[in-house]
Amino acid sequence: QHEDKFLSSFRKLGLDGLPDAVACAKYHVLSNGVGGVAVEYMEESDTKAWVRFRYPRWMYDGAVICGVPVEASRGFLRGWYGQNGVSLGNPRLGFVCVSEDMTGQFGLCGYFREYDHDLTKDERLVFAPDERPPPFDPAKQPEPPPGEWNAERLAKANRNYAVEYIRNGVRELVNVLGRERALELCHLAARLTGLQHYRHMAEAVGGRDGGPEEAAGFLAAMFAGMGDDCRVDSIDDGAVLHQTGLRIARGLEGAERDTLLSCWIEIWRGAVHSQRMFMDVDCSVSETGLVWRITGSSR
Image (cartoon, rainbow, N blue to C red; front, side, top):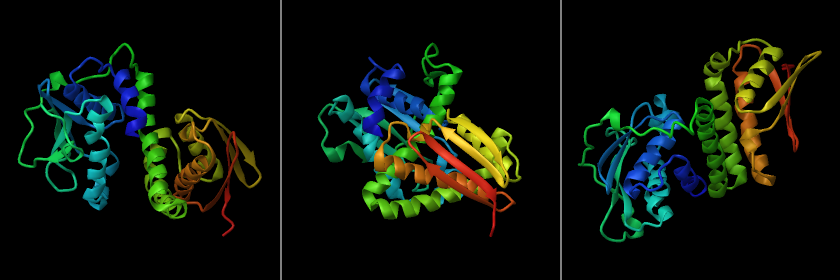
């Protein structure tokens, strides 16, 4: 994700021309901010600028954070924060982490620093748990360029932020574990996510617990929020939802597309199964979209 998005987003956020340490800190504040993640910015100098993530920690909200190993956080730090200098062609730029979520300190916090010498690979990310950030001044918090980032664009960016986490997470899990084991884990996690979050999602789109037609209406509302086109047809024993556009799989082909969609389907199967009425959910995949058939359960 870093390699795909960093430099292009860097320019879109109006950060060209700033000192590298300052620009990187502002990038992480802004890019996370449009995704709904609260991050504070504190600048000490042109060569030292801080970021501090505030709680709750986005997708680690609630007790979920207790189950995340510190290795996951550190892998993220190495792959994102420790890589910024390399991406910018600045071998002197590194990240100093002073606090982590998974160690029970005060949340993810650290600073980008431009040194007076080139850094080795192991020096791009270092830890300094005894340091503390300077006071936060909300008047100095960066904001996206107002002329380019209207409300509609910010809303789409907020959606796409979460979408990229799903796409990249599934891809990398397949790379590490292989497709069969990755799908086993992803399918269960996706279904549990749908089961657990159905009520919150339904409240957001005016959905209500009911039968196949209500379930199809809920799915159509959620998919419309993704920018997809949906049509719901009533049938004798339930409802059929035709979904085209598939923002979640845009730009993907072949096995990667099939893998992602199989996980995506399980989220919504879980959401439907969270309702009081027992329902069967069948979904067929084509080149143009998905067709969902929702009926009362025969079991």
